Image (cartoon, rainbow, N blue to C red):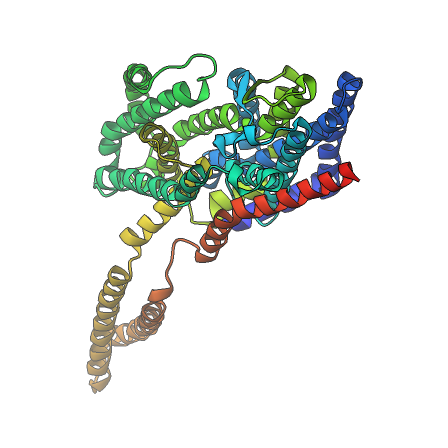
Length: 527
């Protein structure tokens, strides 16, 4: 889906659901959360902070839906495997389902062990810190979404917790080793995602796209690729998506995933064979074979994301709820159903109202995607998380997905538009057209020198004049292409720079905001 088409959709959406209406619906959800939390906890001591925390948690959940979910469906939309409307519907349903079904009933109060809560002895100060962390992370995500920058929601809340923790108890409260791992993920995540996505795309091109008989090659390799995808996603879901329901080790999850992949191969092979009989022997035809797998991958990624990243919104809220109700600070807390509902419903609402902007960025504004490229990105998202988690490498699902987009884009440049290849092809084309032009001109000169010309000679002279005019235009175009060869890029550099800059400053920006908010709360409460 090109940018012009998406801009048309945005304008049409703006007419049917203008900004004020979106804001009103988002505000309505926040008001409902406010009323519910106040009505159900009005008699508790410090209930004000629980109500405020619930409001900020709802705000944070909507921002996660608006920003982070684009990574799951953006490539599928950009490749035209599904429409923007269906992507939003599927993602909203599976994000909420993942949060409700597999979101878990216990979370760590401090995401990723960023600070040591034992160094905050006063439960009220802890409540202030968690409130500041929620608000600052949500504000940063809101800003990133407004400029179209897909950033890590996990890093946003980590920055918020770190900033509030430093403001509450000093720099010694921070686990700087953990922070070092998170900083490393800024490089590791996109690099791994890009390499794996590019690797799958290169395999597909070599084994299918570069063959003369694309259909026969597709019949052989597409079922294998779909089966590998099935293994990756089933293993991913078992390890990450349903770990709160049943926890299995990697080996067991991988074996179960392999069994499922074999079943999928047996079922899919005849379906792919039948579908391949109806397509053309070209790239567009082969691309259509990846449409259904892409839709499934978007749904499964959304489910796993909802199960895991809902904790970024409700973890601090659950911590506030526990501190208010128990008047103590716990390292792990239970998640009441109403807290889980705030996170799950907020994810879906944020995606539906404000998700299209980031879906457009991931799906079309970095590089042009088709179904094969989007499939490679989805594979990278699942496989990178699986292996990185087993190796203990810190990774971000956002950075992996966007890194996958970078990877397929840069591979296209290397395969299809490297400067040397482009210059060589242009030079050959120029020589071929120039040689033809010279032969036309030589023939015309000979015919015009004839003293007696036949009717056929005059007809040929007229044809040569037309042919020469056309060839002159072709030669001029070849020269223009040769001069602009260095400017041929498939990855939009401005988008890459903007996104990387947003990644780098996410943690410090959220931390600074959080510290400011904490001191504001402390000043208000102490005075």
